[in-house]
Length: 265
Ligand code: IPD
Ligand code: CA
Ligand code: CA
Image (cartoon, rainbow, N blue to C red):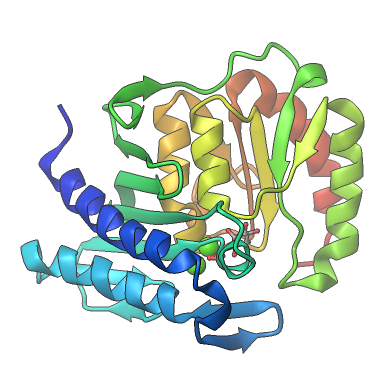
């Protein structure tokens, strides 16, 4: 049975997801602000974060929040890490692939996670030690025996274009060894899809805690491994992420590490 606290995140994600679905067809008229070059925020990102935080605060007014749009709020050993709309660029272009990512960290460790895909009505959830689920069905990472037939998700470092040549080097080395690559545009769903075994692995550089906190727990609870390119587990505070089933992790690291070691960060 799901831990009761996860229901708060599930309800909050449903509320925010309803809003996204309702507004998607009006996307051309949604006000957009540019946060930085290649970085946009819509009224939907903001409204979604407000609704999620309101829902959490209804039950736990004392918990702290780390939200992409409003930053850090409050002090507590319980911190909710929220990406209210992951895949804003897709959303802005009317592409129906985006997610809502909510994680609860207790004393610095992610204990509960929800990633919701409102367009497919797919709720990915996990609590540490209880496995990962898609809606109510248990999910596991893929059992692909080798890289040769693997489909790997990734993304370009579009906000840090200075990292492009380092990234394309890694991309080329990985691409040579696998079946194919996908770039869907929502990091939380990339991780959720690795957890569900749809994608065999995923790597990216230049992410923030709210992009990966929930998805990393999903992959781990689905039996996979998540680390940064240097092998550290704390991907929420890192510059890079690699997620894969154990069998594919070692060969992927072997490909990525030598190039990454030469990158100035
Ligand atoms: C972005 C998406 C994208 C990934 C970026 C993220 P946002 O999040 O997850 O797929 O490549 O690194 O920042 O800005 O749409 O929430
Ligand atoms: Ca994001
Ligand atoms: Ca976002």
